[in-house]
Length: 173
Ligand code: SF4
Image 1 (cartoon, rainbow, N blue to C red):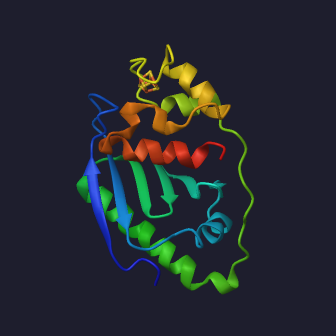
Image 2 (image 1 turned 45 degrees about the vertical axis):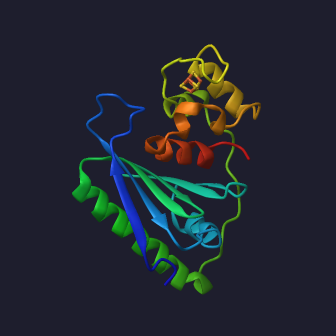
Image 3 (image 1 turned 60 degrees about the horizontal axis):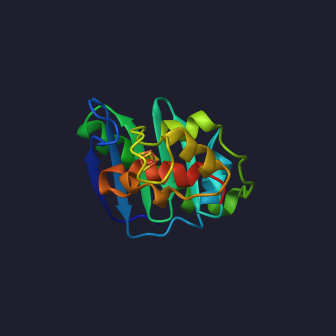
């Protein structure tokens, strides 16, 4: 078993004022780096960023990111759903890790994401604290690797951790 314990934070992102959906972050003691290529091989449509390392995956209506030491899930209805989905994902990781000898890992990396996908994960306040006139400009520079997610101060707020994780997962290294 790879993940034996995790702490779960459930919150409504301040990046999405008025949102009725929740996000969750499972903070792990385990390191998921080695299991990510095996998950990539198992999960249809998953996108692997080996440099992060991170694996993003959309399942039903959920956007999921596996990072080195956390699992982030977005678009949850409430805390009960967050606990259920997170528990299922932890079980998926552990099952994949236990069966890794029978799985051919997939180390292939994904292409650059489209601008609107990156923009959709930014706070969209156009506050200019990053030095860019709009969040869309910042999105374009993220894709071009001219800036990093850490240069948006709003994304550094703890409650935006899931969006930051999603960006890191889909952006080029
Ligand atoms: S710092 Fe930049 S990217 Fe972040 S919310 Fe403000 S304008 Fe948008």
